[in-house]
Image (cartoon, rainbow, N blue to C red; front, side, top):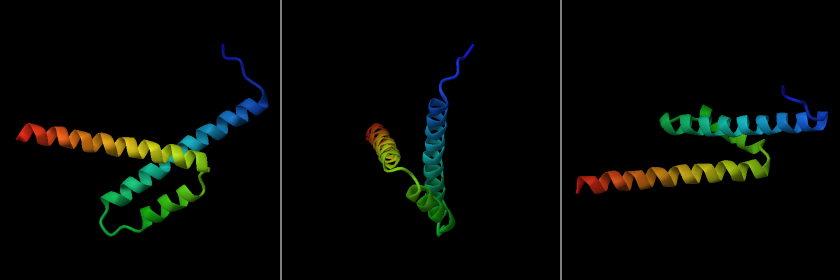
Length: 84
């Protein structure tokens, strides 16, 4: 059976989960914007989500995005190498 921590621990965990959800929201809205030509709605939602995020979380989300992009580029290079 799970033992509950102090109220302070529970609040800290809830804030952490909210922060994770906000990071996913920003990534989702940015991805939708990038896939919809001429979109401004999803861009504005992504920017708003980003601006209300804690700076430490912004850095974490940016690092994940950079790693994801680098992995895609590396995969694209591997795919092209097979065509030669």
